[in-house]
Length: 75
Image (cartoon, rainbow, N blue to C red; front, side):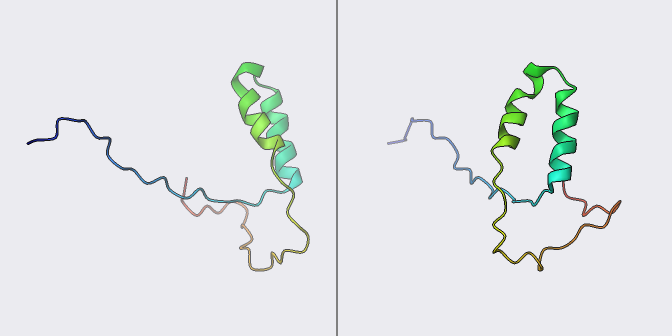
């Protein structure tokens, strides 16, 4: 017998990428968002306020430093 039940295709969620953001960058982003209507940005601002500070014990010397004006082409 044919299975008439509709099955949703299995989709794998990609692993979210993790980024380092400086306090200066975070401040600039928050300043920009504060200039926009509250209803448009409240969710984003809430997410940004939950960012955790990087543990100073973690060695970040292996993190690639971004060259200003150069993009890796990923969006």
